[in-house]
Image (cartoon, rainbow, N blue to C red; front, side):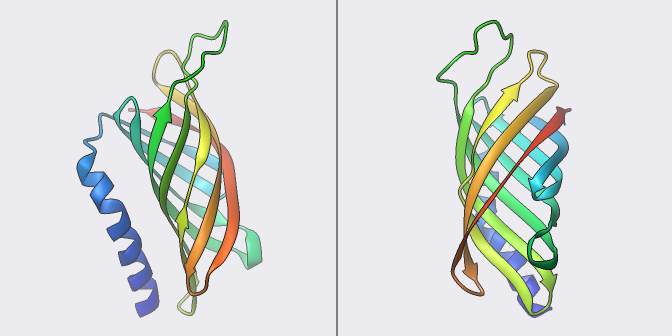
Length: 154
């Protein structure tokens, strides 16, 4: 149990500097499928910066409770002709925690890269991303995660 608490505390410490620096102006909640499959949350600070988090289930190696949090940068470098929406690409840095039992948990650094389709009315977005993860605890291992999802903004 102590190991799980230490991993969660370390993950939270990695996210707090970005969270304090970013005053959320819009918050979206939705679902995602892939690795993980579960809930997705995104809080925009401005049109170029956001915090992203997910909680769900990772199916590999017998199943894990999956948590991640990222600080994201968005770039609006191209337009899709005939589409009344924005389609920025994004990249970021964050952390990922996998929990299964007291002796089998993982903490890693996550580097997401994706596309975010922002619908014209601003109430929905759809995204697809891939994110390499470098696990640091309990051992160093490189993994690839990714998924797609949709969020509704309040």
